[in-house]
Image 1 (tube, rainbow, N blue to C red):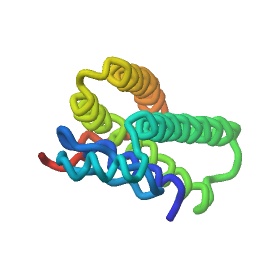
Image 2: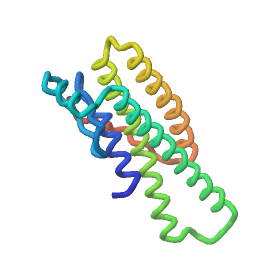
Image 3: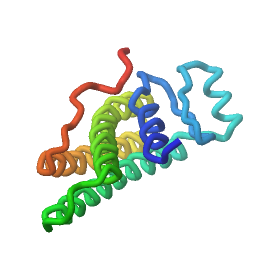
Length: 169
């Protein structure tokens, strides 16, 4: 699977966290645990904790933001090169530009949806001020960088998705 698709898929799991679910990050395949006593025992047995999970969530969010920003940089470079009066766009460049636009659009949509999943995760850990503040800081970082991404996408005429990628609760 393409690296960008895998990254989007993992971030969608975070976006779809439901109220009071806990995240499992013990493997490359993220999943969620429903709220139950068994979940507590299972997480203890696997030596899985909220700090480890939040580190993975932060890493994935930053990786997605950075990947989108780098892709926007590639789009800008290609636009600058095409302004030089060079030859007409070839098929490979056209396909790459479309793939970049789709990734930027999907990535921005997933980042917006992650806010809801992070809010649910924050509610799950209500009472742990350090975790709540860590999640709030991540949400604000995503929102700030996402605003910049949206401005650049608009500038480069990249349409952004308006639909939500979250499941209906």
